[in-house]
Length: 338
Ligand code: NAD
Ligand code: WQD
Image 1: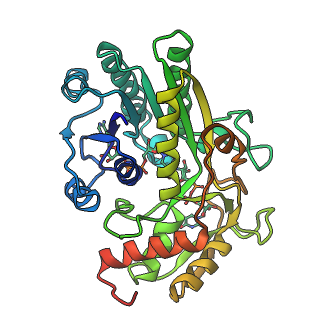
Image 2 (image 1 turned 45 degrees about the horizontal axis):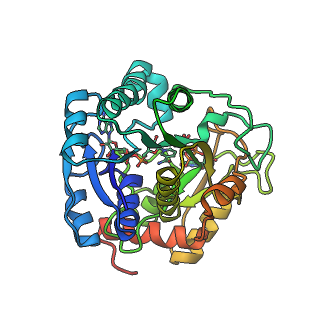
């Protein structure tokens, strides 16, 4: 087993990954500046996994702090989650995203190199594909970033590939997530979007609690089976399990891989609403609204590479995603009709 630092460790995907890593016997170290995470996440995690874990409050751009943490905890590998992730915000403030997502990654890699830590798993995104020619999308599909956020992910992937190619990193896995949703079955940790949720699932759950009156469906005239946008929603716990397998793969092999993480199943907005209503018994009023700028009609993964390389496939279906997303939101909103 290994000693692993999770940057952005108090965040949505990292905290769920921490539960799986701990169950598999890895020693985890969380590093986070808490700019987008609730401060009691580490305490909730300790309660969930029943073990203590070091928590370092630091910015990934602080090379000295990161270096000291890597040395103090004898870290053997890093899973790099820390970043900003809002497409609209990235277009409004490009330099903020270049600073945190790219310079932050460089500073982290410098600290890793200074401490001889040469293995990394990186949180990339299917956003790097932009408007795909077709789905399912394989890893060799063209990358056509269409926003600053996607640019920062592709640039960081390239940095990591170059460092692996030149022997500065011994192993690396760039993981391109499709659409993570849901929460840990305990409903103790989950997604905490700031303000009005941009993403579909948290918005649906807030309509279900009555915090939002209805869901705007951004376009029902796309070339899809029901006219609404199609995406590859993946349960955050499936994503967490993929990270554990990816980490163990790069601990055992000196390789550099780029892998899609999705179910391979395209689900439309109306499909998801229907599944949510069936899974929870809650009704979601709809308003058909104009298309959202930048949205593509349909994209979903070809998950074959993850199966071939990591032996991983998503196990949880859309009903599990809806049930767990609702349980988390209902608990946060004090709705107790579960
Ligand atoms: P999140 O915001 O919940 O987690 C990111 C964490 O990083 C937060 O805890 C935040 O406090 C921390 N952080 C941000 N800037 C930091 C800095 N400068 N120094 C230290 N910590 C910092 O987001 P998430 O949804 O868990 O996403 C995790 C990663 O996965 C991100 O890199 C994101 O781009 C990527 N990703 C997310 C999605 C998604 O839909 N959630 C999809 C694809 C890729
Ligand atoms: C999904 C579908 C919308 C909200 C985004 C980022 C991507 C990644 C994942 C970080 C689309 C429709 C949505 C609503 C709606 N994040 N929708 N009403 O846009 O596929 O991906 O999150 O890496 O970078 O772009 O996810 O959940 O915003 O939208 O009709 O209120 O739901 O049009 O078809 P998206 P989403």
